[in-house]
Length: 298
Ligand code: GLU
Image 1: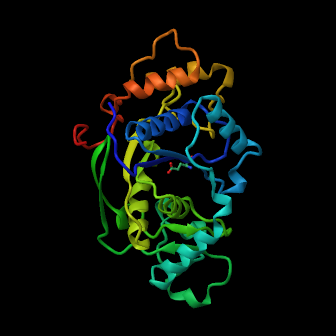
Image 2: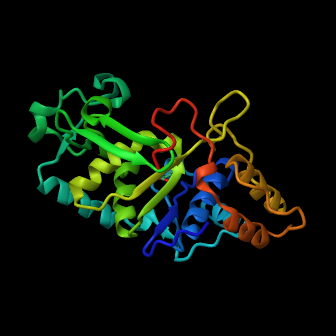
Image 3: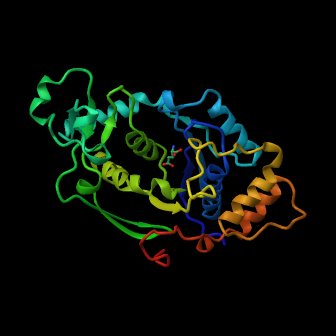
């Protein structure tokens, strides 16, 4: 059912750590269909931020696979590798607001989840080039948001994920920084992505507030798993999608998203996508198992 919302801007933001697999197609397709339902724009951003984790040729193969599935972005691809100046500018802004500190704590000095216990605090001015930049999260920072599928969330950010890294010791920008700067730069209003990223959302909302950026709406999808319950991901060798099977792949993704199947006579991706758009019903999306929050709080 169309629900036109002028100014809706959604996106799919893959990291080129391997080829597109069914799990990433599900996120791409759901974000695309939500954008279409609202009469909005759908963008693709290549998060090529971390060369050591990237696989040569993966970015091109992901873009080819999206095209083979009929998923064509409405604007040029934004490449994070070309956005370093913007990330530096954001760090400057945060630094000038007194929100950053240098951390050269070794792994052994860090607490659970890589939290900095503050041992670097008294040495700030003596810390050399080899340091991470972390953002301060004051005590009692409670982040609240309402997920489009999972309902209400509240998190004590200082307790759960304190003082997180924005630029790593190796000089690479952290995903949390880049994603927030670029969602702001691209005027993204709605983020539809896998629930494996749910625990990043509070950090991103906090960073948006620190940078004076608007908060997008979030909808976190259930994540497809291997038979053993492990998330299907490039790291655990999810099989790449075969372009010749694109129509079937879309059908499988729709099945996972609990959406009606397009008529069997439709074989090409454009026809399947048109039918999926006409019948897309986010209220039918499956819940994320184990997630708190009322599903009907949309
Ligand atoms: N690049 C991230 C990934 O592939 C997703 C970023 C996002 O959707 O916020 O896991």
